[in-house]
Image (cartoon, rainbow, N blue to C red; front, top):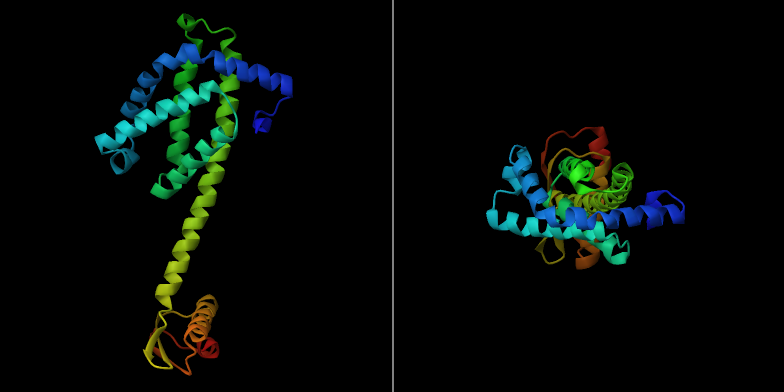
Length: 228
């Protein structure tokens, strides 16, 4: 899990120590930073689509504060990774784009960096602390993006399966007789889907006859006829 920091073990430990040292500096300002983030978010298109409900926003704010507290705690274990995977799945499920996620991460990194270099913060070697925090953010982002992509592929596959079922609605017309109305364009991929759906339904019902209604097929050329 620590490989994302791309450093020898001793150097990684030093950078994790730097991140944890930021907790007392930034921890009591996380609510302020999250509040600033939502002020900034009001000017972006995803605000009205995803963050218009004040009750929902209050819950999300609390979760973000908790997320950053865990971040600066820097305990990189299975629980830490599982939280990031849940975050990626949620983003994919609600349709919040990776662009929006990256913009948010960039906002917080910029905000944290400004607070770290502030002379009032009294952070030792602020530049090194920023580098350490940035590397951990990059590792977090890699896990979120990987999970987001995996979940998005699953959603697309599920949608494709649903569309295939809608486009090949084989139904029982009478005992031993099935009916399949076909509408639209038939290409080799759809022809394969039609055949799979027909064979599956025949195997399920032990039907002896199949009626295929092709009156809704827009073009019937030699290739389409060969498919049928």
